[in-house]
Structure formats: structure tokens, C-alpha cells
Length: 526
Image 1 (cartoon, rainbow, N blue to C red):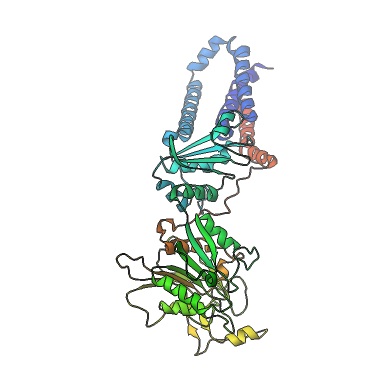
Image 2 (cartoon, rainbow, N blue to C red):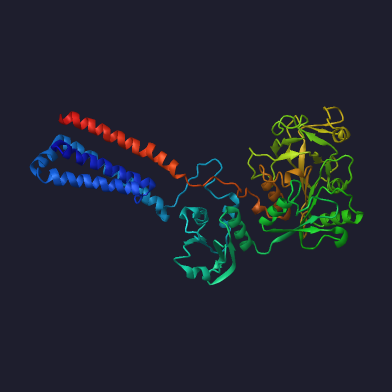
């Protein structure tokens, strides 16, 4: 090797070494590619020193004192300062003392939901979360658990490798499938313990709520009149409805009023969903009596022809709410390219109410075959009424149900007998508070499809349901946006994709720089 290329080894080694150090901050200094860069860079510098530096110490001294060398020293100095700044940023980022986070994703997929934040901020006593890395996988999969620690000083998180610390498996009573232990209370006097089998935000937050809220409240679901079944997993069933309520740490049980005779004393609320068969008079009277004594009722109705049950209409009317005998059409905001009559549409607006205050304004529920619901003109003046969901001003309530439900290809248009929009689709009622008596609360929807298995996972339907239940039973602090079931995709990049990105973003600039230096060095030394 000629003398000029031996001297070039110093410059080449410095470039390769710096690329290895800088790349190490992004993908890890122990990564084979970055580690090999640093080794090659050091070997090039060592070869330069052994082959040239030791033999030409005098020349090296002149070079060092020269103008170009001073320029080079300054460049190395600036590079060292830059690397030092990167090292400081890296240290601050990994130091828990300076634990600050920003989530710039539109849906906040790297942050806890409002409900989860409230759950940990309202903790009265310490909460310990111990996550067991059963499969020995990537520790970053436990980042979600660490978010709970970040939100409250009362939460302490520990990530455990069960192979390295098998005694902790027995200490925390972990069984087959358990991956997270939760202990609430002082270490020497726990108030509750729980173990869960998956690390989703929904599961963790629900486990925290169960530990901190004590005994679950109970709501009853009226049965006996051919209502949708809580055990039916079909599109029209209400299995997902029941599961969503139970996930909120609220028990839901069927209630056959014809057998029970009255609403149980432990009822936090009663749910009545579109009974197809008429109730017995005693059943309807029992529900009204329960409501009058400070009870909470959730009523839902479907438009039908002919009406086989008017019980929901009559119970709502007792409290000054009118459920019209119509079918709401809204051609402006209908969903997709649906039927020409637009019986399936997206609601247009929310009215201010505790149920809707936390729902995003850009997301509205999807209604399908709905009746309009409004406040009667002779409604009690000492009660509070809110029409919480509305159609656009282009919607209307079609009253010719016979044509719609009996003809195979019905055609209708707005006429004088119809009700013009905007129309209300749900009404919330609360009686005047009286001393020593809980206020009556009533919530009436003109549609049931939005809460069925086929619709509840869409838009804000699940949050709307749970906010409604929590408002009825007085759990206002739980009215919020819940963890989404579908989060961002955290799958690792395929190896081929990783190397394509690494090559285009790392190797290509490095090779271009080295090629440029080779050309520059040849011209300089020729």
C-alpha cells in the first residue's frame, strides 16, 4: 500500500467510527452492524498509527500544527460535542427522573385513555403492578404497563423474568396463563389482589376499577316479552352489550317481573329494550313505581307496524317524554350508499349533557330504523330534559309506516303529516332533587340497533352505552372515553424491510461520503 493511502486510513477510520457511534444511538451500540463499524474504524486508525504515525512523528507534528490540521481538529471537536449532546439526550430519555412523554399520534395510541388516567389518578392507596415476561420476549411489549406508573406516583411497576426469579411466581400466586399481578393497598395490608391473562389497556383498567370500587353495582335487564337476548351472539343479539357493561365493573342480570312481582331492592337501574310482546299491567306499574321512587330506567324502542307493544311509549310518556310512531329518515348524512330512504344514517349533533360531554364531536352514532323521541309540551316544569342526539335539519319523521313495512319497494316523501327535522333521537330526564330521596333518571332511545352485536363496535356506540349506564346509576366520574379495542399495529418490521430502510438511510449516505472522500483525496495527493 502506498504512503498516501496509508495516510487516508486515518480519515476513513474516523468516518466509519463516527457512523458506528451515531448509528448506535438509534438501533443500539451492541447491534452487530454498529459494533462492526466501530471495530473497523478503530482498526483503520490503529493501522494508520502503526504504519505511518509512529514512523513520521516529526511530519505528524508539522501536520498537527498546520492550518488544515487545525481545521480538522475543530471538525473533530465539533463532532465530539455533537455526540456528547446526543449522549446527554439519550441519558435524559432513559432516566426516570426526567420522564416526559409526548404523543403526537392523532388517536393517542401511545397514551392511556381518559378512563385509565382517571382510574389511577383517583387511587387512594398504592397500587403495585408486576408484569411477568413469561415468553422471554421483547421488554418493549410492557410499555403499556409502564404508562400507568407514569400517570401516578401511587403506581409502582415491576417487570419480572420468571426464569431468573422463579420465587416471585409463587409469592404473587401466579397461575398458568397469568401475566400481570395487581396488588392494591399498603404492602403489609393489601385491600385486594387480582391477576390477569393479557396486557391490554381494557383488561388492566377494568382490573384496577374492580380492586378500587369495591362491590359492583347491579343493573337488571327486563326479559319475558321477547326482548333481544343477553346471551345471543348473532348480529341482532345483545351479548356484546352485556359484556361491555360487565367490563365496567357493573353486574347485569335478567329480570322477569312477572315472576319477581317488583324491581329488586339492589337494582341500580333497569333496562327495557324493545319488548315485542305486551307487558302485563302489573309489570308496567312495577317499573313506573320503581322510577317514581328514585329509580333509574333505560328504555329503547324500535319502530314497528303494527305496534305489538306500546309499553315503552307509555312508560316514557308518564315522565313527559314522547316516543313518536314514526321512522326517521335523513338523506343528507346517511351511511355509505344505503337505501334511498336513508333509514340508516349518522346522527348530526350532540346536545351538552354528562353522557355526551366526553364523546368526540367528529364521531357520531349510527342509527338504523329509529323513531324520534322528544319532550312533550305538557312535561313537568320542575324536571330537567335534554335531547342528547339529533339528526340534521334535512331529516324527517315519516309517519306512513304501513307503506314502509308492507311494501317490497316502498317510496315515501315528506308531507304535512310528517315531522320535520332536526329530530331528537334520545332524551335524558332527571327529576328535581328532593331531600332524602334520590332523583329519578330516565334515558329513552328511539333505536336499539346501535347497541346490538353488529353495531356496538362502531364509532362511539360502546362509549355511548357505558356513559349512559354510568350516568343513570350515578357514576359520573366514569363517564369518559374508554380504551379502544383496536390499537396501533405494534408488530416488528420484517427483517428484509429493516435492512432496506437501514441500507437507504445509513449505508447509502456512508458510501457516498466515503466515495467523495476517496475522489477528493486522489485529487489532493496527485
